[in-house]
Length: 254
Image (cartoon, rainbow, N blue to C red; front, side, top):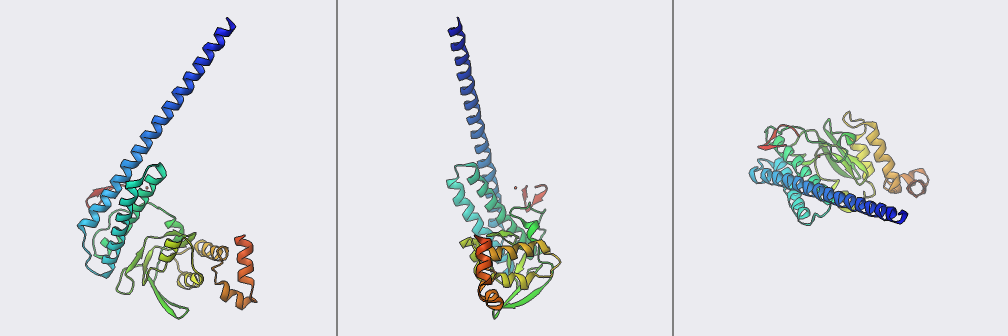
């Protein structure tokens, strides 16, 4: 009798485990299917915007080129997306493209539509709130809260390789090497400090984050700083401390 009871308990336990595993696997499949459908919708919305808009000036043309680049990237990611994280990456890339679409519409004097969600720390990075012209290492750079002939390159703002880049329009896309390489080059902290220091739209916290990151990756101008402070300060300090909308947007419901 006791043996029969134990066998029944084992059967019930095994059945419960099988049911739990089956239910969980089905839930995961549904979640993945939903994520894929959501990602596909965002890619299609971005594609519709890119296909239907034509830039009227340098700034809007550049922003639409960046949006088209994100559309191509999102399409490639969509084809190989097999996991939740990969589907979320597709959605993120498509949303980034819509940031550039929004910028292009602004440059053309069109209604940009509703604000988009914070994707990668835009609120933390801040935004360009005034015109700035700086010279760093003999090269001139400009930043502005508005598109213009001198500032045709838009960035939606956010964290790039661990460092905040404020939302705004720039004379050139100086952040792109870090986007590609995943790390900032030596000397970029000087540019960040010169361009954004004291700017109302950029919080001191963002400057502090860039400063700390400069030491962490050894790019807080270890050469200049080290030379000025005794030769090894940049290297030693760097080494020790390094050691997803409501409303209608251009014809699409978000």
